[in-house]
Every structure is written in structure tokens, then in C-alpha cells.
Amino acid sequence: MTLVRVAGPRSAAPLGPLDPREAAWRPDLADIALAGQVAVPHYARPVPHVAARQVVMRSADDPGATPVSELLPGEGFLVLDEGHGHAWGYSAHDHYVGHVPLDALLQGEAAAATHLAGPGDALLFEAPDIKAPVAAALPAASRVVAGPYDERFLSIAAGPWSGTFLHRRHALPAGGDPSLDWVAVAEGFLGTPYRWGGRSRAGIDCSGLVQVARLLAGRPTRRDTDMQQAGAAPIARDDAGRGDLAFWPGHVGILLGPGLLLHANAHAMAVTREPLAEVEARIGAAASFARGCGFRATSG
Image (cartoon, rainbow, N blue to C red; front, side, top):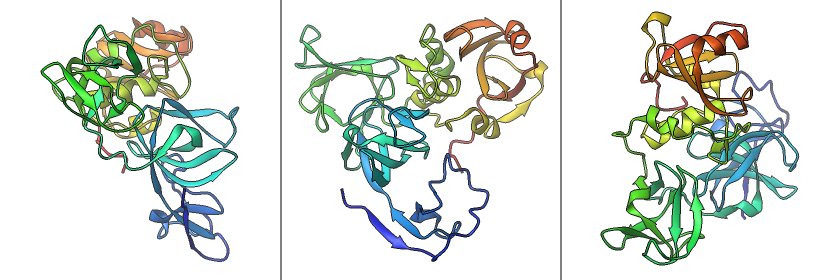
């Protein structure tokens, strides 16, 4: 990998109010896109990579560090630095900053992805036949480069699954499908284990559930609960209904109706459906509400 650094000021100035979850800077190094906003000794030009497999993003270059998010197969990751077998940078789809094992990344652009796996998890077959051996299973929202094969299958043309086949029923447009009911997509995760930082049916957290369900429906959404709340339009409790969001500090759930909540939660250690009143009683605080269709689509 060729990493390019550009010299900055000799000493770092105060780094300002940029959120390090979405703005890639450290006292010694920053994304060159931030050169006009933070002063550090060096800036790095991001090097595009693609996740070769599902992999945890962590807070440090240590396999035991706290998870912060997760890359799904085929998602892009922009590398700014490497060390201890890890790359430091940010995910292409939501600009979230973290550390990823180098052996989980392939150098190259992710922009060529033609489809998302979805709306559920998908299988890749070794031949264009549903009876053929399964080559791999892809979590929903994984990205693939695929071309037409026949009326039922797409052929995978690039990446670690090149030469395998994806059924058209398991393929969505690369930008998601706006005709999908994102709340119904989220309900498809019922029973999924709770996992801090997770974004798949192997384990998901509360904001990951909102993000992935909306991504599959063509509605890009930021990663963390407070980011999602900041990007949505507040509404009165009496106006909240299906598809709106209930927020508490550090937690978010999706309303299925005026008094029913779908959420990934550490109480049940799963994605569950339960009365809103029971959740509020357990948390010990009333929810605040936001219009679920009112998200801004970018992280700006």
C-alpha cells in the first residue's frame, strides 16, 4: 500500500470542534480534506480499499479494542495510516472513523459496486442454479459488482466472489430500493442478537438497525444515535406514529405504532418488539420523538 503524507504546521494547534467519529484527525495526522480546519504536523491522502469480508471497526489498532462499527463485505474504506496490522481511516458509506485489520481489506475503489445484497441476507452460488453449492453468504447491504447472466441470476464480476452467482431476488440497486418499506425491512431483524457496533443479522445495535434498514431502502443515514437524532425533525409525542423514532440518550427505537417499539437492546440482548411504555419504565425516562422520514441524507 502506498500512503501519501503532506507536511503540515510544525506544531499542532487546538483541534477545534470536529467530531472525531466522522472527521479523521489525530494530534499527529489528519485527512488532507481537513487541512483548512485543523492544524497537525501531517496530512494524509486517503487510499481507497474495499472490505473483503465482514469485519469489526474498532477504536484502536488492537483486536481487543472497543468496537465502534462494522464494515460489510464490499463496503469501501479509505485508509489514512497503518500500524500493528491495522488500517486507520473511515468507511465510504457514512464517513465513520475507526481501525480495521489490514487483511480484511482489498486495495481499490468500491464505487463500481452495482448492487446491494438484500433486502435480507443473500447466498452466492458456485453455479447459476439454486441447487448448486453455496460459495458464500452475504449480510444484507453487502456490496457486489455484478452483471447479467440470465433471467434468474447475476454473475459476480469482481472481488473475492468473482465467478459466483447471485439470485436476482437477493439483489437491490447499489443505492438501495426506495420502494421498500424500511420499517418492514427493520422488522426482518427481529430476534437478531444485540451486538455493540454491529450492522448485520449476526449481531446489531440500536442505531445500526436504523441505519441498515434505511440504507436498504435507499435512505442513507448516519451511524450513531445522537447523529441520527440531530439529522431528524423533532415532533410532538402525540404526532408520533409508524416509522418515527423514539430517542433516549444513547438509544433509539423505531415506532411500529403509537405505543409499540422495535429496537435492538441490551436488556433482551436482541432485536425485540415491545410496548413503548415498558421501555420508558425500564429506562426511567420518557422518549423524545423525531419524524423518521425527515432525515437529512448526508452526514454534513
